[in-house]
Length: 230
Image (cartoon, rainbow, N blue to C red; front, side):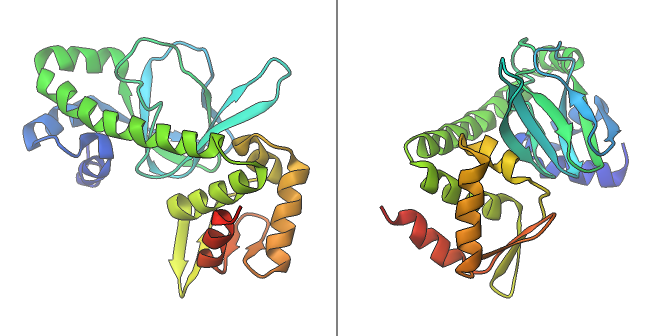
């Protein structure tokens, strides 16, 4: 592992409580991989042999229903791991993961990690505490979205993208995420037409600017106020 990789590993939330020796042990079982743009990293239901950590790039995870329609679960960026509980159960991959752009990954073999846990159970205990907090955060966000109507789900997801993927400069937030309106709709459980209408309205009102591979939020506070209105 290179020094740059060592520094990157320390930035991942899952490893934030590990001491130097524990971190060194985890570093020894990591491998680096490059996922080409549009390539599938793993498929839903397949045997889970590794868990991944994004060094650079973007990944989307999605489930497919009986009709073949995608239901996007998440968009993931540098610093994220997937699947979230992958190191702590033997279940198959819960969704398909696809690289949106060329993506640099760290991979940890599940079998090798289990062997490390037998040697150093303190690592598992510390990591599971962190995962508990992450799962609670995800549950809260899911509950929030499930209780809202379509308009407020779209607004909430737009604000979530701004928070997690936005780059702020001079009170303008740029979301460099090549997401189609259909993918946006899949994320919030609505139709592409509903997303088109609301985004067009927000664009006309000067709150956002929609471009091919990015979205610009021009007035974050106005979007927040709009979300809070009934």
